[in-house]
Amino acid sequence: MKVTYHGHSVVAIETNGKKIIIDPFITGNGMCDLEAENVEADVILLTHGHNDHVGDTVELAKKNDALVVAPFELATYLGWQGVNTHPMHIGGGHDFDFGHVKLTQAFHGSAYTEEENQRIVYTGMPAGILFTAEGKTIYHMGDTGLFSDIKLIAERTNVDLLFVPIGDNFTMGPEDAKTAVEWISPEYTVPMHYNTMPVIKQDPKKFVDSLGDTKGKALEAGESIEL
Image (cartoon, rainbow, N blue to C red; front, side):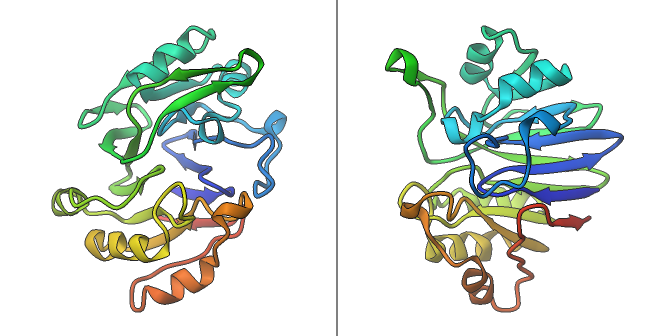
């Protein structure tokens, strides 16, 4: 399985002959190395409805005839835009032909802002994603603060690769993110959700160094890990 980081919270996975992308905020993302018109995706996984995570989902889904997997309210909203969706919710899992997806809780918000209408659309609860394929599990935490039930997730799941937000202000900062990593004890850790805007400016290499013996890597946009 090939896993590639593309800046902010954008993660691409190639497994079982499928191309999967998580939270494809590409257009307007200065940290992203992709161009939306060139992205191929069979599946789009979404953690929540904020614009910097939904990103180019509608355009990518229509262009690629991709399946969008998202929390129920967000999936419903995107379905109204003509997108093929599979709704899920926190605690639920589903076996797809590309792998197993389970949604975890995340402590954050979830709403899509329609700037042209000056309207905020509620899109349900935010989530993290546990994705399992080829005997490996990736935990994309989405946007979240630190919460103690992370310990329960860790007790029940062997996480091979963790994507953890470190930006602070909107999500965990480096100190809380380090605690989350200690609880989860993944094989590899990659920081995300930082430096896209001044208010979430962080040093990812400093964060990785703070993990000590835990295997961490601050991936550049476009850099990959093989699981």
